[in-house]
Image 1 (tube, rainbow, N blue to C red):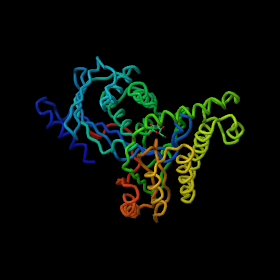
Image 2 (image 1 turned 90 degrees about the vertical axis):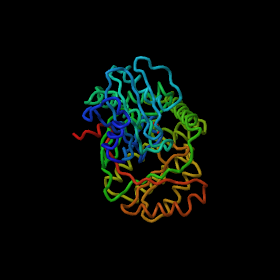
Image 3 (image 1 turned 120 degrees about the vertical axis):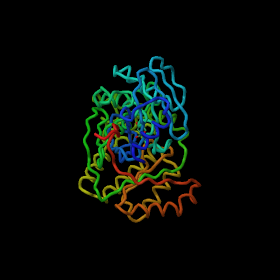
Image 4 (image 1 turned 135 degrees about the horizontal axis):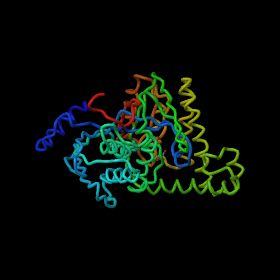
Length: 392
Ligand code: GLA
């Protein structure tokens, strides 16, 4: 991404009639995220291991004395307007994330003010890299004073999640907003999605994170995602009826799941099996990263992909093909689909300096095999949302 200062210049040029001073402009930035391990575990109170990455969304903004948000999209020149004193129902456009964040912050009694802004982003939309959580967190910073949102960090995370759940109407878990808000350069973040306790896990410096976008649309994602949630809750309910300590699949281990297998329908059992084993894989991935166990990482990622494909049924021919090509490419340590699935991306750990081999392998056969074009992003784990300009 260009320097934030270029966005400052662009805002001043676009609003030259407004008489803004350069010193009044701030640039807020929120990163994308990729999940290294632990998918669909967040809404089951389980564990996840995401990282914020250096694809990002930035807003250059000037605080306004009125209650109007006027946000221009650099890519199209379109303006979105939100009146903070008259936030209506959702419109079904990307402005919903702006209005929803303002609504949720107001509900949480965080003080907000209008602004004039210019937004640009290097996060591909519809790729499953949390561009929506990035809008929410960037807007939360833009709506707040120079010191940032007045809420405690985890309250801000929950508030952004509420914008998505209660206003936009997508029943996602907490992982995306957490990772986008709390990212740390060079680190994955081990998150307990029940307590929100977390710790940074260093990513070995001899590994690169490579995100491969399958180029496939994620139609059906919302309804299929909600179906998976319901199936997981059904399994948890059945088991909880006979196991007093169980509130969510997080509380179930493999032995317990097998004891109650006969009571579960086949689908609920398969979904639960994924969640129970995926939680273990988050712990195992953390250990393998800490000890530099590359063989272990390869095995754990492969098991996760197989489980997401066969038990959770959220993979696709495109995602399976990306993983298959990656696993046959020298220098690729580990590969799996990441995020919700139903299209979107894979995450790959690659020996540093060897990502071109993966790029070439995909160019050779991915499109021929699937009819889709892959995009490859070599990324670094990055810091979470905050002020990108002026420098501290
Ligand atoms: C989406 C949701 C997250 C999480 C992932 C799957 O990204 O927004 O809350 O459930 O899917 O791990």
